[in-house]
Every structure is written in C-alpha cells, then in structure tokens.
Amino acid sequence: MKVEFDAIKDLTPHIWTEGREWMWMAKVWAILEKKGLTTYETQAEKLQIYMRAVSAAAIYLDYIHIVFDEIEYYETLYWNITEIMSENELFFLYGRARTDDPPESATDVLNVLDSHGRADLMEVLTQEMSLADIALGLYYTGVDPYSYDYGDDEDDDQDEEKELRPFATYDGYWKLITESTASLIEIAEFPDLMAGYEWLNENAYQIGMF
Image (cartoon, rainbow, N blue to C red; front, side, top):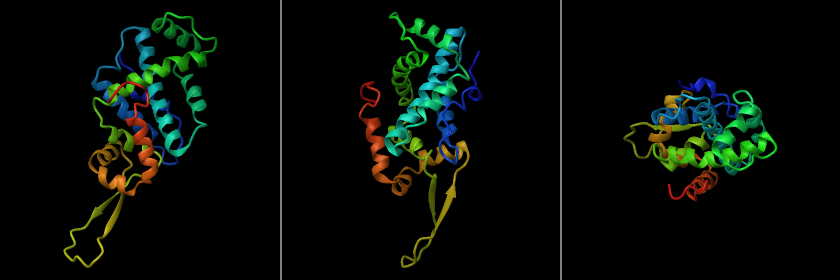
C-alpha cells in the first residue's frame, strides 16, 4: 500500500498568501516515491512514512525561521499532525524505533523522533537535488517566484525589455528553480538567501558533508 500525497499535503502550515508551501512538500514526496519510501506493508511502516512528511514540513519551518524569522508556526505543525497520527501511534512508533523509555508527553516524543528524521530525509533529498535548488525552492515559497524574459533586442543602446512571468503550477515552479538559478539569485534578497544556503551547507542536521 502507499501513502498518497493528498494524505499529507496539508501538513505544512500555510504561511504565505500565495500558498506555495505544498509545492515543497510535493517535491519531497516525488523524491520519496522515486526512492520507494512512500509504500508500506505494516502499520509501523505507514507511521514512519508519516514521520517523513512531518520532517519535510519541519525542514521547511526551520528554513523560513532562519531566513524570514518566522517562528510561530511550529505549533501549527504539531496541531496538524493530529490529523494523521494519534498520541498512541506516536508512542508506538517511538517504541519501535528506540529502546529507551519515552518522554512523558506526545510532543516530546515527536521532537525526539523528528530530530533524527530531518537528517535522514535531508540525506535522501540531497541525493536528488543540489543544495542550491533546495535553498531556492524553500526561499521562493515566501517570495514571488518571478524570472525575467529578455527580448532579442539588437539595439545595445536600448534598455532590455523585461517581462515578469509568475509560475503558479508545480511543474512551472520547479522548472524555474532548476533552470533559472542565476536570475533567481539576482532578484532575491541576497543576504537572506545566502543565510539559508549557508545554514544548509553547514550541515544543518549534522548528517556529514552533503
């Protein structure tokens, strides 16, 4: 059996007006599907897949906390988790993953499980995505993802005409991220973008060199 994207797409807290958070989660899910990490045979395996979705949402929140100083949405993530996992299931999963006594609260159990899950998930993602694509993909969830089309103007004295193109679809969004890296960096708030990239590049989840 398989955990479909629709089952977890709303886990990531909706923060920005444009609502592109789901595009990050969808990209993560596409990679996990490619790796065979969204299918299960037992209840424990299903819960582990749910935890990968939790980790994907948490990576997103960690990034925007570094770059945009947004911190209040972690609680929203924990509330959203109750839609897919019960407290009993969290404690069950803890018992399957660890041999020590679990913390007293389900939130603390979740924190322990997720702290390891983020590193494992990031290791999978970096097998399929560059750090630049990850950083840009996360950054442009909160910033309008426009790029410039430059006209073929042969008159060097005339200003180049630029046409803004919004990308509102999943395919268009990630095509933009992977094919327009230079222009996206140019129009970004460079210090903020670099803060996020440096955080990722400095082994944010202590998994060793990416």
